[in-house]
Image 1: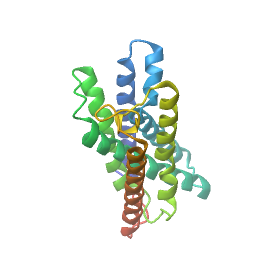
Image 2 (image 1 turned 90 degrees about the vertical axis):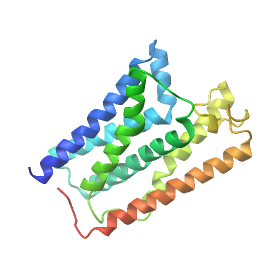
Image 3 (image 1 turned 135 degrees about the vertical axis):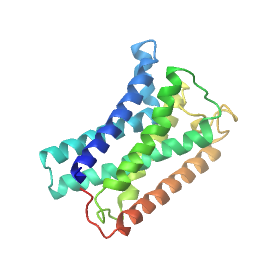
Image 4 (image 1 turned 60 degrees about the vertical axis):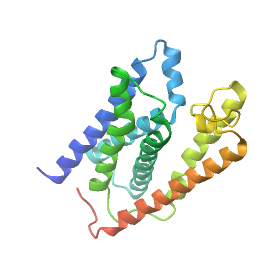
Length: 215
């Protein structure tokens, strides 16, 4: 099997598991409004982003979109989506898995969203991403999304009392919240620093291989 065929199969696999996880999670909602509210969660957003980026890459390879500008945008999206979904998996496992114990369909959806899709996206990126193509400012772009998500979540929580995750709630003590704005600020800065460090590690890994493409 040729490398471009393997890349296509891998990309389709990432697309499939990401979409499957999102759809299964949405089907657990009783009303359309509940399904729409699911998109307030970072987990569902990042899985949706992974599916969109996988689709764009498949279309790009099929259509032969090889221009410098399109290639750069896709590389930024590829690295960003992998970084964001990796943090989804890590934060869920460390901070949330002990509080949420789903069963049945919810367990399958949860496993897809928090483990299967992240691992599939990481493997696909490690094998097929264009080598020596990442630039040093990429991690600074990648961190904008999680910072923006945190800011919007906190402001919305102040307005309507809904916080998607306990560690974004400065108004309540643990385990319902993080306890104070100081704790929230420290937490967001710490996680942001982790994003940047992992981002630069990804840039380093992207430049370690002398190969230019695995296609």
